[in-house]
Structure formats: C-alpha cells, structure tokens
Length: 95
Length: 483
Image 1 (tube, rainbow over the protein chains, first blue to last red):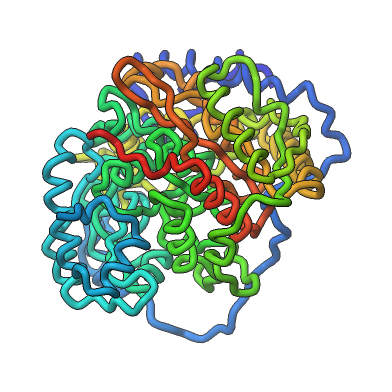
Image 2: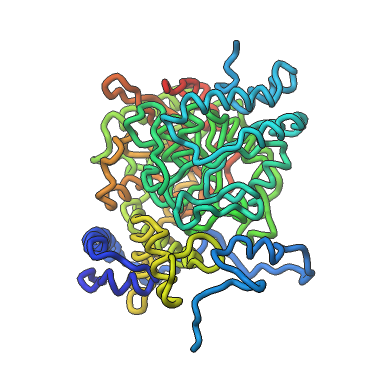
C-alpha cells in the first residue's frame, strides 16, 4: 500500500487518458500526497469487518419481461460524433 | 411593487392561488433579475425564457408546484436541454429524455428552468472545476459559491430562481447551500431516483433540493421522492408528507453533538456561530446529547477511494463513440479513446479517474478499495449507534466560510479535507440538511455559515421539521444576498 510504486503514466494508460508531460508530473506529485494521506486507513484493524458496498442490503431487482417503448435508433444515433448506415462509426479495429 | 423574484416557492404558490400574480409574471421577474445579476454571478450555463414563458402561460396552479420555475444542475437530464456536466466532453449534447426527478417535477406542475453551473462531473467543492465559467458567491463576488452544486446555490441565493435541484455525492448540495446562505437537503440514499442523473459515484449520489427555506425543500422532496422502476436502488417506503412536521417546535428533540466535529483547524468564527446556534436550540427546548463518532477522521480517505473508484468506472462511458466530443482524426481506436478523454476532461476529473483506476487495479484492490469499504462499515456503525439515543446530529456543514476564488485550486488535498463534515452522510446513506445560522464578517462583506442536521436513513420528515423550527427561531434564512 505504499505510494512510491504509483506510476501516473501507467495508470493513465489503464484509464485510457493521454497525459502531457507537465500534467503527468503535477498529477504524480498531487496524487502522491493524496495517497500518503490515505495511508491513515492502515492504522485501523478491519479484520472480521464486512465491507459495505451499499448502505442498505440490496438484492437483484427483477421485473416482468414485457417489451416497452424505448429510445428510437434515430434519437440515439443523432447524438453520435459519427454515424452512418444506422451504425456508430469508429476507426477500423480489425485488419 | 413586490419583487416576485425574492419570494419562496411557497409564497409564489399562495400568490398564484390568491390571483395576486400569475406564473407569467414570475418568469418575467426572474428574467429581469437574471439579466441584472447573472453577468456577475454567472450561475447559469444556459436558459430559455421563451420556453419557460410558454409553460407559465398554461401552468396548472392547482398542482403542488404549479407554475414554479425550478433551476436544474447541469448533471440532470431535461429532455431537449443541454446536459454538459460543465464538461467539454459533453459540449453540444442535448438530453434525449427526462430524468425521473424532472418528470416528477413536471407532474407536480413545476417548470424546469435553465442549466446551472457546477464542478465538472460534480467533482469539486468550489465550482471552479467548471470547464465553462466561474460562478461567484452572491454574498461576496470575489469568493467561491462552494460546490459542486455552486450554480444551483448561487442562483437561489441571488434570487434568480426560487429553488433548484442539485446532486450530493460528498456534500455537493449542503456545502454550497451553507456557503451561499441557502437551505440544502441531501435525501437518504434510495429516497430519490437517480435515473437521468449523470452518474459520478453510484453508491453515494443523491438528487436533492436547494431553496431559501426548509418548507420549500419539503415541497420539492414531496414531488421528486419515491420508488422508480428505472433505478433499482430506489426504495419504496410507505408514502409520507415531508411537510408534516413543519411548524413544530424543538421541545423534546434530542440533538447529538459529535465531539469529532468541533476540531482544531476550523475557522473559529464558524465554530462560535455553530455553538451559538446549538445554544439557541437548547434554549428552545432541544435536549443536547454529547456523543462520539470515533471513525470521523477516516471519512475523507474512505470517500476519496470509494468515490474515485466508482467514478473511474462510471466515466468510462465517455469514450467518443456514442455521444459527446470525439478527438479529430484518430489514427486508431486507442488513439480515439486516449485523446478524446485527454481533450474532453478537465484536470480534476482526470486526477480522480486516475486515482480511482489505481485503487481498483490488480494488486491494490484489497489494500485500498476493499479496506475502504470495511472502514465504511465502521463509519455506518458509528451513526447507527448514535441514532439510538437522538433524533438528529447537529454540527457544522463546512469548517470554513466561502474562500477567495483561486485560493485552493492548486492543492487538491486541501480542497478534499474541507469535505470532512459532509461526506460521512453519503458514506452512511443517511439524510442531511444545511440551514443558514449566521454570518462571519470579512471586511465589508457578510459570509454565511451553515448549520448541518443529520438524521437516520428515511427520517427526512423529522429532519425538515427540526430545520424549519431552527429557521423560524433564528430568522437567518430571511436575509438576502446583497448582489
């Protein structure tokens, strides 16, 4: 849980964000200090404590499988940066 | 002539029904008010007076919020309106549907009006992380309005709208309400549907009202609360009227004072305003109970792990494919992703996505995310134990008054630490409200201080009753910002 092995460039790649050199350096320093602060949590003994994902017990919620109205294809595609032939257009993925 | 812009939603409703004035008069009054003050306050990213006038002409004033314009934080979808989350990545996006909270406001007769500025994707405590403009505090325009719902709070404080919707993930309704001298309510987790709210941290986010009285907050909550099949985390408690305890007194109310919320480092002037407010509650019959929430100091760390982790997943959808901005001439799909997100997101959003990605990454998950979720359990237990003995906790909303623009933008950790009194409510899923409790004098300006009441999950009716009682005793919320 030590922050020295926090490599902002590597994590930014995982997050699919390109970073300029100066931004990477600033984030490395700023997030390093945030991670140092978070070390505080190590002081606590949490053995045997159940994690909380939600503040009340939540179970799978289901409904009847009945088709209903939904957003039209035109309305959805109208928001796309590029669309054609009723499809979202992206750079070629498969050669 | 009466200034309609200064009236609360409840007062507007009375005026409509007595035929003293009409909803059209109100929209026109707000239009002149906004044109006069918004060039300075800059709360609105956009607004459409003509559309609001058309709605006002045909408003059904027999409905609970009939003909009342409600400002909307730019993170909640209103069909046909822009919804940018104050981010360049959503510039040009127009919402294709109404959020459930908006559909319910409409069903109650309200007029959703305008898009209010915020920290980008609700990440921030000062609204300085907006990609588009700097909103100013109506009490002192050289200072921040708080955040992330800073546009909502500033617009309400400056009488540009009678009330607004905000969202609260770690204090984003209560803190700007406190810093702008408004009343702001974060409902319990599950009370209000988040369908149509752009997700930040899904186990923490709630939509809630900001207004100039607790009564107005209750009226808005009446409209927006309730189970929604479109949000599987929304609860279905027995129907209740959130105005039921308005007008009550504080006799017999047990108020808990957590010793961890009165710490060194807070502005001593804020501390004395809070202590005076608590004494006033006691003089009016409240019973004060000292208590401890021993895990308070861990709240900020837990929050900035859980909130960023959830944000890193939620914001993965902004990839330049289906909506929003896309980088020019991508050379391949990866290039499209990384440059779209580099260009589209501001610094704070990038920082939080990166932190969230790190705490979830292989090898670190247990040490950070899982441990934070366990400490979250301890924080919840602190509150469960406290609420066995009391009706509500009373404490400061923020350790400081509004700070000068630019003061903390280079120091994220300092900005994060100021959320200490509000984030626990989100981590524990309970409800909280901030009400004005006086002013700190800074030069020629008066800066509002907020008093926070926290109630157990689904106790909003009682909480609003307590807040309303304090408001009537103190009279602070009747003061108007000088802008």
